[in-house]
Length: 70
Image (cartoon, rainbow, N blue to C red; front, side):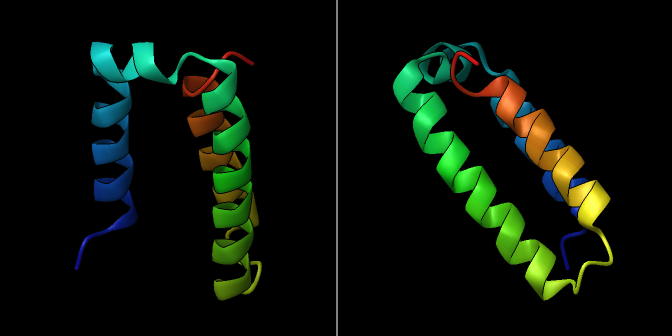
């Protein structure tokens, strides 16, 4: 089973790629990412029953910093 730390590490590696950074640095990417990250965070919070809300929001915020232009 893949752990949260493994998923986080793989996501960070993906987001650190220079080609990915360039593609993600746009208003369109910002708009899409806000919707996707918000929906994903809400779904995960619902599944976990609120036990990890702080960690989920932190992960969402960190991912959001890497996508788009805001």
